[in-house]
Image (tube, rainbow, N blue to C red; front, side):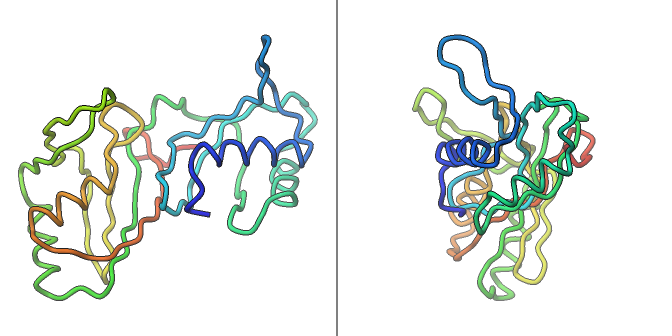
Length: 200
C-alpha cells in the first residue's frame, strides 16, 4: 500500500466511503464531491501508522464507533482504521511529524558518522522550490529530534507548513555529506502540534 500515490489514495477513500455507505457531507456547487482532507500527505514509498483523515458526517445519530466498523468492513488489506473522534486541533496547528527510518545492519563507523551528522550546527542542502527552481536551505533548525539505536533512526521534523521537511531530504544530505550509502525504509509514526502533542 505504501506505493499508492496520495492522489490515488484520495480516489480510493472516496470509493471506499461510497462502498461503506458513510453519510458524509459533500461540497456544494456544480461539481459536488465528497469532502475529504488528509492532514499531511504521505510521500510515495513511505509507510504510515498515524495518518489523519478529516471528513464531516451529516447524520447526527451515526456514531464514531459505527464509522470505524463500517470503514474497516469495506476496506482492503493494508489499510486499517483505528479511531474516530471529534477534532481537537485545526489542521494549521500541525507543526511536526515523527518518522522511523530502518537501515540495514550498519557498522560502528557508519553509526558514528550518522551521529556526528546530526550534531552539526548547520546542514546545508538543496531543495526544489514550488516554482521548480533550486535553493540552498539549512535543515538543521528543522530537525527537532534525531536518535539512532539498533539500526533505526527516530526523527521528528517540521511538518504541515512552508518549512515542511521530508526525511528523504535529510537522508540525502546525510549520505552526501558523510559519504555513505545505505538502504532504508521510512515509516511515519506520529503527527504533532507545536507543543509536540499527538495531533487528533
